[in-house]
Amino acid sequence: MPNYAKPYLTPAQQAALLAQRGMDLVGSDAARALETIGYYRLSAYWYPYRDVDQRQTSRAQRVHRSSAVPDGTPFTQILDLYTFDQRIKMAVMEAIERIEVAVRVQIADVLGRRSPFGQHQVACLDGAFTGRRPGEAASRHERWLDRLREQQRRSSEDFVQHFRTKYSGDLPIWTAIELLDFGAMATLFTGLKRVDRDAVAARLGVVDKHRRGDGSVLANWLRVLNFVRNTCAHHARLWNRHFTEKVRTSALGGMENLRHLQHISERDRARFYPALAVIWHLMSAIAPESSWHARTRTVLDGFPADGVVGPPDMGFPPGWGRHLRHRPRA
Image 1 (tube, rainbow, N blue to C red):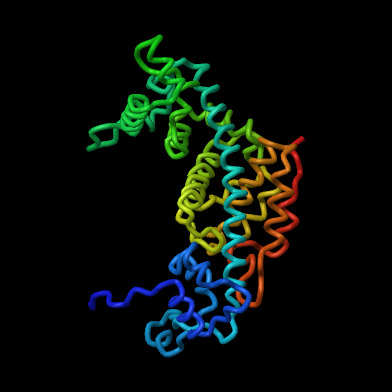
Image 2: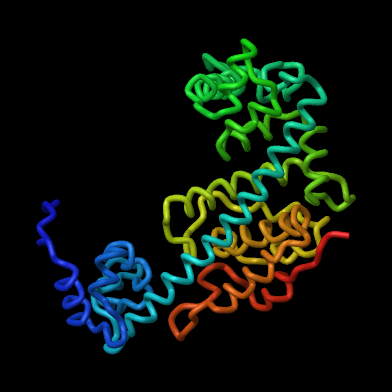
């Protein structure tokens, strides 16, 4: 395997290389964009435009693309696609913040009713979370508690400092919940007793076909949203990303606006659309009077579709607009 040997190129040289490969740079300050966004980051947005290398494709038995794009491919289209991705990520992060805060409050409520320190007490949690599996030195609960205690020890938050000046020991759940990142919060949710998970789900409109809260579905959604959040927080591409955490579509019969997800392809299950659909659903329950739905729909309607890229790249099915409408929960 050869060592990497490509030379360093300045942004101006990178722009010249793109022009040489068929990109139309007219109307764009390509060098400036490459300087402020980066060649490597933008390359993911022009990848679908790259020509297919038929010889390599035939040899490798999979699609292989050359470095060139069809002559005249507008660089402005690449920038528009990048800008769209930025805008939809900002909308998604706004919604996930609202969802995260609401779930934190609900976890603290159901667990606090059992005990102010329910997060520490085995009797307040699910046995699958607190029990040790064969060969394990510590249970998931014990490992989770180690992280919580370390976060409490290292925290400089005012509310933690205030607690230390007045009390010793562990924080109560309604305070400790604020120290958790999204992943740790989702882990605690899965560790609640089933009746408590279902109660939280019911309050957020996550129900089964009998209109009862379904905590297993919400647990799945939280894992998916954690993946989305991390993608956005690290400024990674969202619009046509392959999701390793996928919405489980087999248990959505109780939510009319999500039933259509049961009929999408396996490929589209691993795209952005199912995650957006559940975010849309949760926001309708959590913030029914918010302008978020209308603003996000405006962003979606502005997708810079052309003959190469379009909403299907994100897993959007035909007629998706019928499902992403704002219908506040009654």
